[in-house]
Structures are given as structure tokens and as C-alpha cells.
Image (cartoon, rainbow, N blue to C red; front, side, top):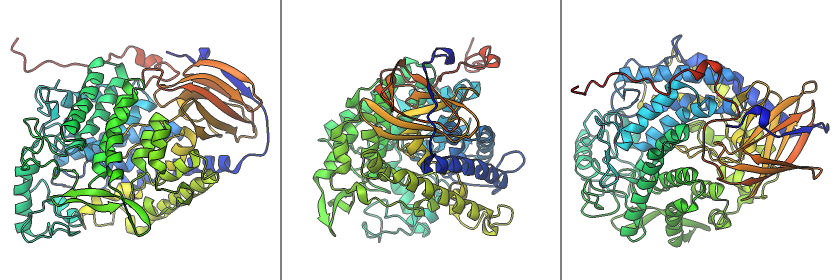
Length: 632
């Protein structure tokens, strides 16, 4: 492990006018600190449980409360107030208890849901390891959760090692959930009214219509019957997001079983895609065959090519799994080929409509339909990982990055979701030089808007009607003020993670050398302005007029990259040959650095530049109880 005493150091004492972006960045960090703590206090009880309903049926929604607070720890990792990490951990434990009482969470993990939602719920849990990898509870929970999918938990039957399948689209601590009941989908009925019919042969319904009358009990009964016949059993691509959890376990202790499982599961989907002529099938039977319960059709599965979202929930899990595989294989880019192939497949079927190039988003019995402008975020994440010009071209074809809009509107419906990934790509590729100031001001405006909203009488948790609609399960994620896009893009040099369970693929992260904590030190601002396959260009600014600050730069979120050398603005080269570099900034000083990097040169790890606190050294890796199933 690198120690702070052995890290190469650079000193910067060149003082000049502070750039506007640096002042905006520090203002945004402070605003998120204060507003997030206020938000947490407003919407929780004294025991950190959420002020909400006394009951909540069905299997939807346990992800949503976690999402409302998940960015707290990520903000701390960037340089936010350490109290946010503490509050997040307290609230995470309280939510886990509260939703256990509702009956959805069992043994600290959702009893039965899909991996689009498991992935959302786990994002904040992943951040805990980046904040402090030496917390026993986090490590042991990770091992327990991963065992639900690797087959090590003999009491849970999610995984079939013979066919390399997760046995059902709905899964969790209760195992494969084959039979869907009236109560299971109850809270979703109102929400699902907004989507097309889940089946093309639903009685009296046009398969291409935009809405479905889930409120009609007769229709709902038929939907449940068809779900149980056609969708309830077997594997689906969205399950590939489970590789995020298993990769998370690998980065704690590098047990090869986690690496092997992740690579084998991705390879299984590669084989199914090849067997299907190059198109990934969206439903695999328990026998390993394509379309077992769907008349042999490769389309029509749960979160598949047709329902409810189409290509979005095909491409994102492939992007997540490919990125995980690259990470743990130390840069084997072949693992991105599956998602690349599906992006290219859709592009080959493009049409020009209304002056725009569009690709199909859904496949019906009659063929490809629902043509839309290509979603930029998936190929951008792929490019960000590979730094391959061929992947950059996948993003840029048919798209003018210089026209990307910067807006606060998207945050209103889910303020933790990425909205400006394409604009960041435009900036990092040199098309939008004014992006840093624009996105920082945008996020400041968005946070202030969130503050005004959650302070308003309309959103008073003590007086509002929590039973007014099923959508109230989303209140916390809609209102939360920890909007981090600008800070992730500019300080870390990467896109926000894939929202439904992706890991943080970024160029750098930071540590406070004096306080020995993750994140930028007080007063320090950072800007990553260029990334290539071999270089990272960044600027550090100390906005304090009185105090020297010491920042440790790490190559990659998980120290997966290696810093070969650092060249400052005067051309002075410092040899590093390690994962960390310390920069001591005099009061008011700034420095521009070009880091020469070897990407994916190291095994990814949660360990940073500081060892565990002395009080943690004697704590065992795991605490084990008696095996109550043993006959001995």
C-alpha cells in the first residue's frame, strides 16, 4: 500500500487572479453541504427513519429512499462535509430497517425486485467503500449480498452455475421470484398506466398504444397471467447489472471467485448473442435456450427489447457489465465488444426523420419500431473507459456536440440522475470551452431550486399527504439537493456513473493530505480539461488567501491507473511511477499539470493512500456465527 510519506510531492506557489470556475466550484460544494444536511433533517425522524407511510405493499420502491440520499457520500468523496457521509450511513441503516418492516427488504437486501432497481439502490452503498474501505459492516454486507448471486448462499436459488443464468428477472434475498401476485404489482399500477402494453396480444389493446389500463382489474389479471407464463422465469440482460455488486466485492479483497463469476456471466451473454445471430436476446429459459417461454422469440422479455423502455435497458446493463469486466481484467477492452456490437446494430438500421438521424428503440412482432435519436450516454461511458477513437466516433456520428443544451429542467424529475453527459463529452473533446462555468452555474441554480422546493409548505413532510399517489415513493429523490454532475465532470474527469448500478469510471480522485480523508481539501478547486489514452490535463487552485493546502491526486477512482510522470505549466517534469502524487498549494496558488498515465496498469482497489485507522486494525475481516444447518 502506498503511504503518504512515500508519495512524490510537487509545490506550487504561483499566485494570480482566481478563475471564475474555481470560485463557482467551491460555492457549489458549500451549497450542497449546507442544503443536504438541512434536507436530511427535514425528511427524517430523530432515529433517521423517513417521515412517511406506516405501510407499503408490493415489491416496488425500496430503491427510491436509498436514491434520495445516495449522493451524500459521493459528495464527501469529492470534498464535501464529512457529516454527510455520517448522515448517509445512519439513514441507510434506518431505511434498511424501515423497509424490512414494510416487508420488502429481508436480511438487509431487497427480497424480490429486478436489477434495474437493485442497481439504483446499491449505488450509494458502493460509495461507502470509496469513502472508507475499512468499515467491517460494509465489507461483510458486501460479501453477504454477493453470495446471493454467486451461488455461495445455499439457501437462495438465484444462480444456476450450469447454464450460467440468474434464474428470474425478479430476484433478491428471497431467491428467484417466479410467480407474480396481485399484491406484487399493486403500487405500480398507477405508474405503469403511462407505458405501452407489456404484451402484444393483450385483450382489446393496441400493441403500439402509449398507455395501458392497469387500473382495470380484468386487464390487470390478464397481465399477471401472461407475466407468469412468459416473463417470470429465466434470465434477462438487465441481470448483468449484478456484475456491479460482485465487482464491488472483488475490489475489497481481490478474491478471484468474484472476478471469475463476473467474466463468466458476461461471456455467457456473449455466447447467447452469437447464437442469436449477433442480436442479444432478451429472454432465456431455465434450460438456457432463447425464448423458452415466449414461442422461441428472442424479443418480448422483461425489461427487454420491447417493454417497458426498450433499448435503454438493454444497452445500459451491457455498458455496466463491460466496464466492470475491463476494470477487473486490468484493461482487456474486448469486454466492451458486446455493448459496442448492439450500439452498431441499431446504428445500421438508422433512418432520417424530421431532419434527424434516428435508430430503433423497440422490437415488436412486426419488427423494429419507435425510432429515436441515439442515446449518447452509453457510447460515452464506453469511450470514457476505452479512450479509443473508434468509440469516440460512435458518439459523434450524427450528432453535433457544440449544440448540446445546458438546462436545469431534467433535474426536476430526479435530481441525482445524469442530465449533461453529452455536454461534458463535448467539453472534454474540445467543442464547448465554456462548459465549466456554464455547468457550475447550472448546478448552483438547480440546487437553489431544490432548496426552495423542499422548504415549501407543499413539501412539508409533516403535513403532506403521503398516501396521495403511488409516485410519492419518489419524493426524496425528486427533492434532494446533492446535484453532483458538475463536480463529477470537472473535478474527477468522467461522466456520472450509469444510474442503474454502474461504478465510477473517472480519470482521477483526490485526498486531503493533512486531514487524511478522501476529497479535495477545503478551498481547493480542480478542473480536468482533457483526457486521452495516455494523458490527463488538470488544474488545481487554492482559493484560500491565507492557508496552504495539500492535495493528493490518485489515478482513477480505484487506483486502477498509474501516474508515470507529471509536467507543470513551466515544463518541469516530476517522475511518479505510482498511483498517487501530492501537490502542495500555497495560499492563492494554482498549478496546471499534465499527467502521463498508464491506464488500467493496476488491480482496482478501494484502498487509498492512507492505511486503516489504528482502532480498526484489530477488527476481523468478518464476524461469523454458528452454522445452524450443520448436523455436527
